Amino acid sequence: MCSNWGIDPWLHLRGLKHVRLSWVDMPDGARGRTNGVDVIWLNKGQQQVERRCALAHELVHLEREHRGCQPLSIEADVCEETARRLIPMDLLSKGLRWARSFDELADELWVTPDVLRDRLTGLADAEWETLLTLELQPL
Image (cartoon, rainbow, N blue to C red; front, side, top):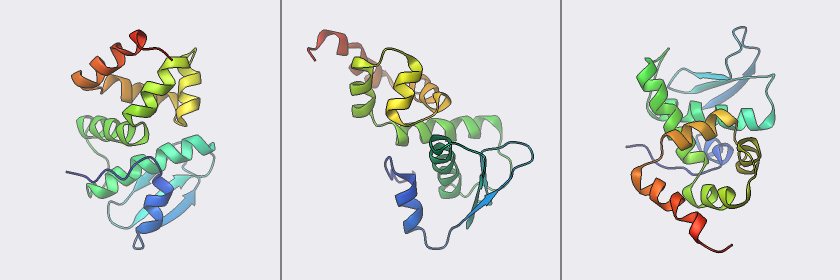
């Protein structure tokens, strides 16, 4: 099982002395890639939140030693794990109590809407139960 390095992928990357981060122009528009060993490439043309999410995603691939393109099922699993790490349950619960829209919640959690969507679709039953009780609790 992968370690859960929390919500700061940049801090985690700093601890991986063997990994080189390279900024490139990805002709296909991909946000990031890794060789699964010691290099992560991030697309230069991204906003800060996109860079954060792309780095987290590539770090999960790196931890799992994925090399090359992965099947859709593996990619979906990496997306779900990335979202879980970037959006801990306590922050999701707090944000849901006051956010007025999906995009506002994504902004508050400092993730892209796609990552927030991955987190919500990947919630475990116990996590759903926690979220469903929020409406009954006072602010």
